[in-house]
Length: 169
Length: 275
Image: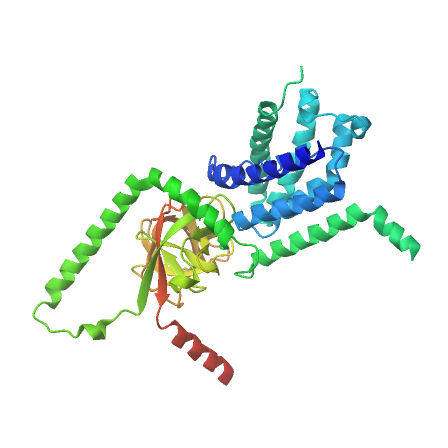
């Protein structure tokens, strides 16, 4: 059981990185909008899993994306940030009980999912784009990038969760 | 002592977060200065390898367009060659004396980005093809960027679409120089700043490289002026330039090797030491 879960997470890690790098970074919708799907790894990482391990894995995940995108440590910083803040986000989107019941994200109702995924994506994108643009001259570009890329990422991540969830009904 | 250890254990997540976050920020700040990011870049064997597999598949989609570009370039060069032939006919010129100062290496772009504010490209040539840092990269239509990081088989280019990039350029039919920067708004429009107020600028004028650095030879095409305005202090003017290159669709590029580079650099160093 436990081994199975580790195996699934490793596969998910690799598949998400490759999808991100080879497919989604080539989209450039309207010239500047790129969805980031790889943070799905952090979002669906087992809720009861080891928190330090998650922070460390997020760093590695972000760094690998940075290698591909030549972006220094931007994605690593954003990933570490949302991995650290995840327990708080979980608490306020699913209520205090998430740690005791082993809820699966695909079984919760849609509004809760949207709040959880939405806040994680938004926090991640705020860090990514602030670090990347890092200039008050481009404030409008910064806000536009955060808003549109977040919407795009949220849609893609929620659909991925829905498509790949096992129906328990 | 015990309390310190307890404190560390209790806050281990926070400390881990702070440590890893600081490393990331450090790596990010490094990339803000030109070719300092020795460690995190896509010119290494793994990322380069994955990108070249990707480009070996996606290249087929652009074959038609790419062939057209190559044929156009061939026609242009052939015309030039004919005109030279007509000029030098009956004159016995020692060809060894007209050796070019520059040599060119061709390469293929295996990853291109243009939607960020600090864009980089990855190409499939590296150290073993005798490419070095700070070499210029062009296509048949115009300039692309400067070599930024190297591994054995791959290299990354700092694109002209990078807010850190600054390249010397001039008006083709005047001798006024300025620097080429990018305001991160449109991947096909770039800005030429610090052109003196007296310079006669007209819409549609061609902009070429200035040749004041060892990186690009003089007269490589860049783009055409689409509009211009005086700066606030009225001492210089800023030009918006439409690039001849389509930066969103690059495939084959040439890397310029300035054969006199070593000599110029050593001479400059000597001057510096003498001062």
